[in-house]
Amino acid sequence: MRPYKLCRDCRHFDPDTVNCLMEKAKQINVVTGDVMYITAYGMRNNYDLCGLGAAYFEHFPDVMAEPLPEEPF
Image 1 (tube, one colour):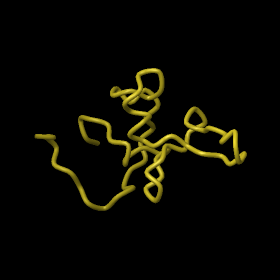
Image 2: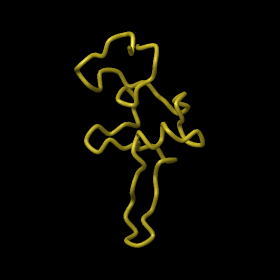
Image 3: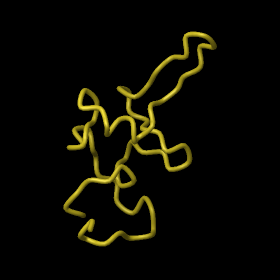
């Protein structure tokens, strides 16, 4: 596992929509009644939600085949 947590490696991440599918990311559109989810980017940039520290991260290995380098920079 990488030393930093990426949403793409989390079991809550939907690669097709780039949304976070955990219950805290679920919202109801008050106009249409449709269920919507906050994007993974939005979840990670809000400290009240997942935040940069990935508070709700649950590792889900091999979600995407293309590996990233061990060092981000």
